[in-house]
Amino acid sequence: FYTKELHIPYSIEAGDKLINEVQRPEGFPVTRKDHQNSLAEYLVENYRELFTDKAFKEHPEIFKNATMKNKDDLLAFFRTLPDNTDLVNDMWMLELNSYIRHAADGGPEAVNFMRALYDTKLSQLDAKLGLLLEYLQTPQYAPKTIVVITSGNGEQFGEHGGFSHDFGLWNEILNTPLIVIMPGYGKQRIKEVTKNIDILPTLTEAVGISTLARAQGKSLMPQIRGEESTEVRYAVSEKDGSGASIQNYEWKLIVPYFPLDLSSLELYHLKVDPGET
Image (tube, rainbow, N blue to C red):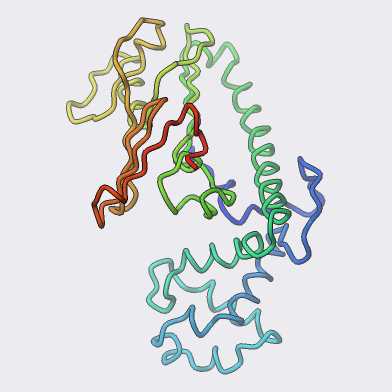
């Protein structure tokens, strides 16, 4: 299953205690209700830039009263719009900017508070996951159940000037967990770079199914079995046609597609510069 609980906004419920004792900056949204109120204010303050000319033409009654007094009306209208609407210039960026402005404008203390919210959400998710794993480790399921825990991306908290996970190919965005619980195998750590595309061939080999010939990943079963390997494994990542990266545990190269010239390449020695600075 897939969860969106760790997506922006990192909202917790009223009464939930932060995992880290960090003072809340004034006006920083904490609960989902806080976020909705913050979003409504953001819409009113910036509606001329956020909505398209078509929106103004088709819904003049909405925008002629776009004031803080009527901010909930504008928010209600916004919530009726589908993700692919042509009435908003960029739906996702609107939602993102309405939230990260509290951290971007609030300095290190605000960023630390945002991270504390995220860590709290992560802790809550971890507790739920623990209950599921306990259930799957019962005699009824443990001998015939493989569990894979992973993520599609990491998250930025001001590193390289970004927030969320949509900007750049640095490892705070690319590095994700890969935890495999497999009957008959004990605890160990694979000392090589792995990729999400390795998961499918790993699982098909584990259960004795032939992997599709077009699968690009490689099975991790030899490493899981503890077999020695002399292969140097690389991970390749791409960002919406704007660039790509290739890395192993020691080196990483980021290549912007446009413009492509030597001065635009980024080469990092990860062993001495893990933050890619």
